[in-house]
Image (cartoon, rainbow, N blue to C red; front, side, top):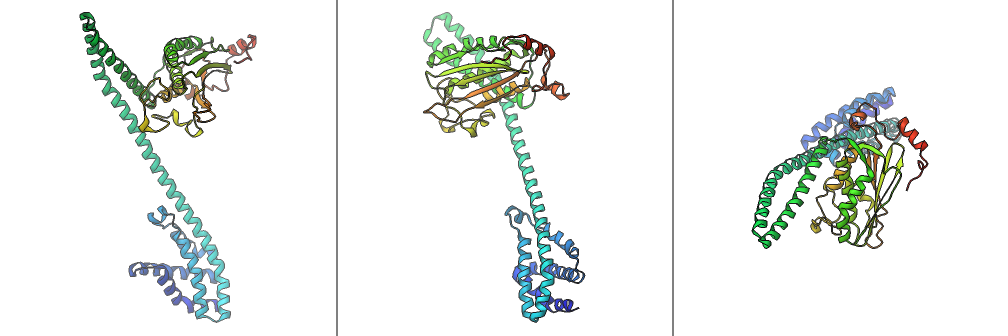
Length: 426
């Protein structure tokens, strides 16, 4: 009964003091006063019954009521209010009650305040987590939309550019034939320069189309028997002039598995190997070395393209496989296709990853870091399944029939067991 009398004595002063300090503006103060009256009534019930659950409804409302501004600014306003209420309750009790009554009242209400504060903090955190999750969801949706827009732009731009390019290429070829017949060597030289630019532009447009196909899961593979050694020989022949011009050395080593017949799209696999090799050439100084090696693994053949180039920093080793992933400053971008640190649209390695993954394989890079003095180099690892039938790995994965790291046919096991070099790797 004494506690109830003490609460009634401080009731009016308590509401006035807290509303005056914590609510600014007459309109805000009226609504806040109503909330304080409700809180005090429930506080009184909790004190008299010893049950803190009386305050749960209002604490729930307060804890889930932060504004967007509070949430965006990480402002824990309700927690602040509860803390101030404790201090102001102590002040009012000292002013309006005797020392004995004040101590008795505070001994009863402080534990209730402590419980209430912990509840409010929990509710505020739940609300904030929900808000952050919502904001992250919106941001992710915007990023996905941006990526879709970028993919759509690439697709439309590539196809729109391809038509006029075909016309230019055709008319240039006819002009070259006419000039060749008339013996005008000077104009013929100019037309060769134009033709070189056309081929360069066609290569970029073809890359844009490939990226669009990969982004939209429309890349079609023509599975047929292929031999890695055959593709590497073709690669050596095509790169020989570039390697010679740069004074570099290309070494292709024999390794277990390079002469194994597997199924894949030979044209696309060659495109992937070419892209990685060209990347190695571009980022290796003149007189540097590119080494292609590999080994046979259970269910896979691994191809490693290593160079003595400038290397790649750890934070950029994932960026290079993203569309338009460029290292270095964009304002220093160069369109050189084979010269040292020559730029490009940043599509070669993303296309390579798309091709390798479409085959059911994977690609990654290892490098000790970027250094143009010590030339730490890079090692690109390509894993291709040693598939012995022309099946699309994406369909097989859908039905759980293709598990490249864990499955191996009985024929493959037998072949390896009977091979004297089945455990060796170069």
